[in-house]
Length: 239
Image (cartoon, rainbow, N blue to C red; front, side):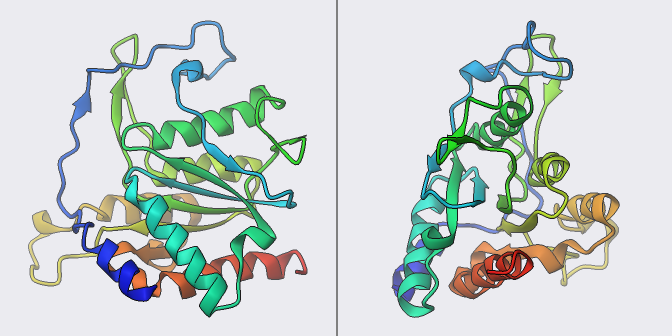
């Protein structure tokens, strides 16, 4: 199993110093008749995939790389077989995985938790909050709204929105970025793309991003990191 996980990780490249373009070919429209603050017509955004295991706690995964779902399912299998920890025994799992719409799928879920509580249900009950989140850091698929405004959501934006529903949410950022400065350069202009996220996360929480990050390029360590995350949450609720 570990060999397969290591093989899949070869499809991920380091994402330092990337340029993100604005996508115009499929613009999302303004939500003209929605609640105040709504910016997108969520009816044209894909729904997240909800694995309803009938549990009390909800675990969301957001990523713009479709192969991550396959990768994490292998990681979860490894956790169950080798680490004696079955994610589905403790959590409902919500997948927001899509090349273009992953962050907007998560945003749709959050928006509907606020304004349309009966739309998404688990165990026949409206989803009120997310307890644990594994978020891609630099999703940022940019779109141009109907009024011409450019809009994007990265992993920290999604985390900030989730915090409003549950201040005690546990989070890790699953990223192919180097968290920190390029060790081969002292030139300020060659700081890693992720530096702006370090500052952004620090401003939001007062904490260090590196302490809540799981590198995709060291995915063989992911089972232990994810178990630590989930057990940390379960300890807080007495499980």
